[in-house]
Image (cartoon, rainbow, N blue to C red):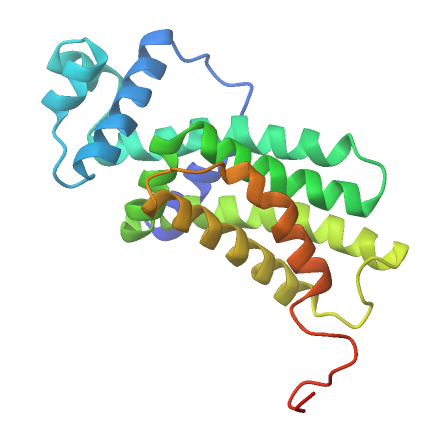
Length: 219
């Protein structure tokens, strides 16, 4: 399978919400697998460990998945549909760009806090595997597209400067959010991740410099 066909496959997995409904057992295996991946690490995990966590026989795993890579791929496809729909709802229920921006960041942090196993695997494992690159690229694009809508509306409403490079702003915001999640994961999830949303939004909107000081000058 070439890169184009793989990307087409994973895009369809992400976007197709009208396909065959997956069984409860399929979802149970997915959740068990991500727990094992988070605790053991993806490469050290075995099908037997996943089967034991899910309460099924080893052979049952292969009725739904080809291998561990397929499990991880399907997990992110399954989770993406759920999380992206929540992102979309969080943005759409707000009227102005400021509320949309705050809702999106808060929802992002809330969803990762609500599934720490997913957050651990995403931060520690997912970006190591090249086989996931097309899927992760598509997930990133979907998120950046939503951010772009909010930023463009914010420019029209005067919340964001009109001279900004939107592509740079989107990457800056996503990088900041992922850094906050990564710090939370490596701290063992010992504090309220969602509580970081308002300070983070404030930092994005206000920056770290004083309006009275020009960059490079000493106040």
